[in-house]
Image 1: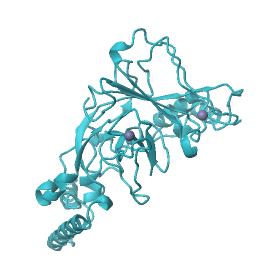
Image 2: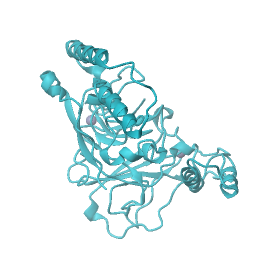
Image 3: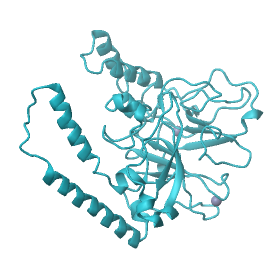
Image 4: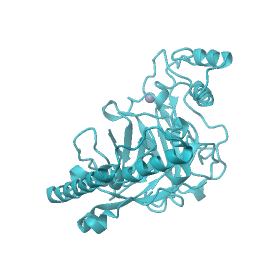
Length: 360
Ligand SMILES: [Zn+2]
Ligand SMILES: [Zn+2]
């Protein structure tokens, strides 16, 4: 099934034409749980990985005595999702107790740890995926111990390929026997890429444009107050029939549609995506420049803790309206890095320059 982001509630470039200079496309990946094949874009594999090529490993010391087996993490997630809205069965209780932290952490014995296959993205599916000339496939890995990369951040490894050069595909694909934290283990997902338009993070626009946006938002609030004056607040709070209730709710929904704001609806799409802009809602904006050539690096892949925040988000795809509160649909991948968001930035001048990460 495809995923369709509703049109933005306002054509903001018609209101503020100067914003057209701060537009970028992004491809929302719309991961949903399921297993793809190696010829498809996916989260958590299987990858189009050559049978005769070594799997990437982390060579840092993984001496930690506790952790989580990825298979246990996935089993626990299945149990929690399956029991939604009811009590656990005895069997489910047994599984949850047995898959708790530290229960089965194997001794890693100082061996290099195979990295987790995190994502595989084909440029044919994802128009905003731009890599080195002639490469059409990006494979993303990380070490699920979070702190083995530069500056004690997560160690992320990118592999760009020409997919037609891959012959026999590795059938038994390695995965780390243990993860430092459950939220570093991605649940396998299929992707439903969809291109959307974004506008630059508010705090990075000129002061004049920020003022224009604030004035415009204030104008919307004034309109809304006028509407509420017209609303009959003496309306009954209990309803004789379902039809009455529906009519009242429809009125409420119509008013809610006025609660549009730049940051929430017109700027940056939530969820896993390729391209687009970086949001700096938790920290001040920080430059992410290429260490090799100094070019500002836009985000290539954004890894988000959820696909939208709450059921009323205007970014909720039409196809998911009936499952807007389902945790498995809101957070299909189960990954939580930083304070919810990790971005992999690549160099626009030369994508083979070393990537950088940013977190929110
Ligand atoms: Zn590691
Ligand atoms: Zn560079």
